[in-house]
Image 1 (cartoon, rainbow, N blue to C red):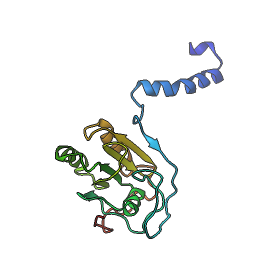
Image 2 (cartoon, one colour):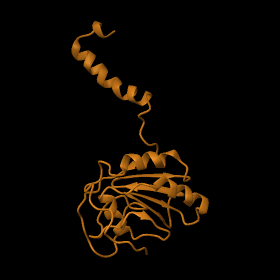
Image 3 (cartoon, rainbow, N blue to C red):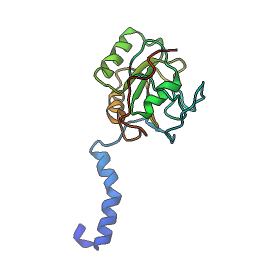
Image 4 (cartoon, one colour):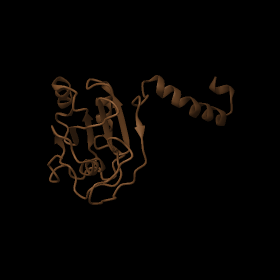
Length: 173
C-alpha cells in the first residue's frame, strides 16, 4: 500500500493513523481526566478561592503541606503548594468508611509525594488532584487512581517538580 503513493502522502497517512494505532495499543489516557491551565509561583497569604473542588492549581500559601496521610481536612492553600512541587492529593468524602480509607492508604503507601485526606463537598466519593489535572472516581479501588498517581506524582505538569514535600506545614484545619 505504501509504495503506491508519493512519500509526502505516506507521511501524511502515517501521521493521521498514529493516534488510532496508539489508542489500539491501550494508550487511551485516564478516562474522565480533567485538565486545567494554572500558572505556578503565585504565593499569597490568607484564605483563597479556587475554581475546582478540590483545587488543582492556582494561587497558594508560600508554605507547602507536608506530604503524608491525614485524618482531618487540609487547608487548600497549603495542599495546592504541594501540588506545585509535584504531589498528588487524593481526597475522599468523610463518610467513605474505614475499609475505603484503608484501601486509599495502601494506594499511597511508599509514595513520598502524595497527600491523602478527607474533604467535604467532593463531587464524587474520591478525587485525585495534581497540578492542572484531576480525576473523580466512585470508589477507592478504581484503577484510574493508581494510573493517576503513577502519571502525576512528580509529573511534568508540576511547575516546581522536585521541590520539598516535607519541612513545611504539617497541621490540619
